[in-house]
Length: 168
Image (cartoon, rainbow, N blue to C red; front, side, top):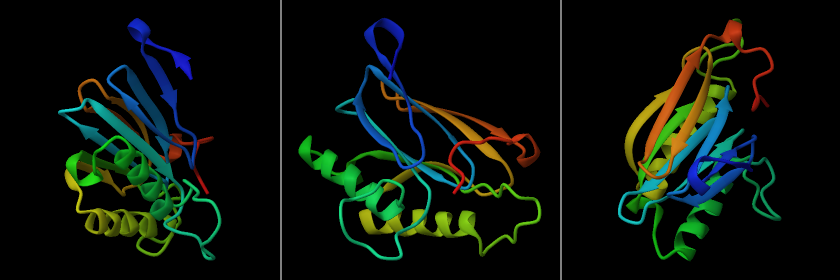
């Protein structure tokens, strides 16, 4: 964590991490083929972001792991319930699933599987998707301001993406 504006905090999510915070928090991440969900509750001014790398584990079990989409949302759902809310009450935005290799097949690789998993999770949790920016070729840098629910995104080309955090 890094101290932010007027007593607030700035959080940078690495792959597999998630964060639930209040109106004094901003969450940032950088995505390649990974997916980020943002959740914002306008009435409570709380929100969350997760940064998952893969749709699910081959062999489920053990402690929940935010590197996997299905488990990341289970973790966020548990935290939302702890706060007396449910994920379907939040405004949801989806980002990521960029094809980072110019020669990679579209439709069958990690980016396509991550995007398909994101939409399946939207259905499973009955989420209200207010915005999405998925697929394409390139990386995304996100800043999510929980005070307002705004998400700022910078989209760069795959050729500029050397050293992007979050590639499996």
